[in-house]
Image 1: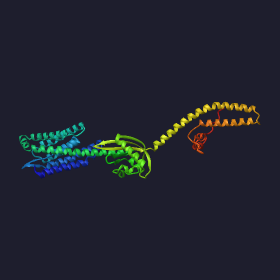
Image 2: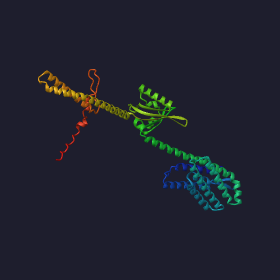
Image 3: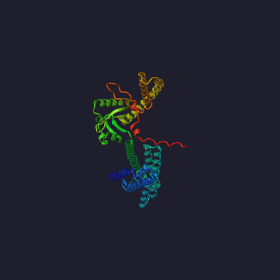
Image 4: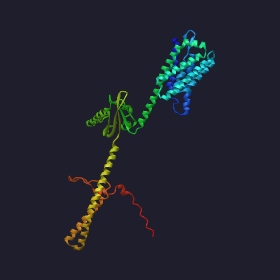
Length: 430
């Protein structure tokens, strides 16, 4: 083969690869209009490449030429389907009809046959779900057979010509389809990985909880989502690549807690913490709840930390505890009030009877009045126990322990006391 002719053909294939790498994401949406536009785009592009390949022939002997017109048709049919391959082949067929000469029918047959087998292999690949070596080998072999049949259509003269060029065609199809198909697959794979990375970034950033990814070997931050940046006050650029320990609280106790959590996570592979100290960009330390997990990927280990502020949880748990304590205290107070009210009613009843039989100006009558007043205060205190709505404690005085202030705990709140009284009920109809 002539070296400069070979380099010219290789250069054209490289241009086709560059075109496919840039146009891969164009019209990639699943709508029918986009699919149709994508077929026309790649069919026309590789049709032009097919015509260029027919012009840039490769001289293998004085007066004996071959061309690699079937390669771009096979490649685009393999990766974009039969319609794109047929369109590229149709442009090559049109050029072959324009230049005329012997072998027009054979040339048209070779191009259309190549597009047909490429479309069939494309369906095979879609059925298997992934392009494999057997698909490429089968396509190269099928294109070689189609090319042989094209020469056979010319009769004895065509077979004699093919006997002189069959090794070169085998090399062209093996390299042009086998090797370049791998490069086309790499283009598609790179775009797929880029799309997956975009989806991963979108999902990561839309998560409501903060997520931070740490390289276990270097202890550096690999990635962080938007929630992490919002809560911590750092930008992603300020976090990624820096050691994790730079963002720990500065006091020794908090750092000890973080070291223990890290060691336990690395040992067990998973850990949940509650109320771990966390320092934001402004230096404020506040508690966070974390879920830590070790994930292995491509021979490296990463720590995935999902964390959230613990203030809401702590406030909710405090309210739950207070509600539970208030319910327990209310049940206890009502039971005590019931037990106290029964004998208290008896005592007050007999005191009232004694007061009516005792002269009012005697000392004993004064004692009875004092006891009756004290019994009334006991009755009022017991009544307050039935109206507990919150916890209010007394202020300790002279070392006395704090205790429940029943008057303040049963009094209406400021909002309730300031709310307007309900309108009076209308009088009953006569």
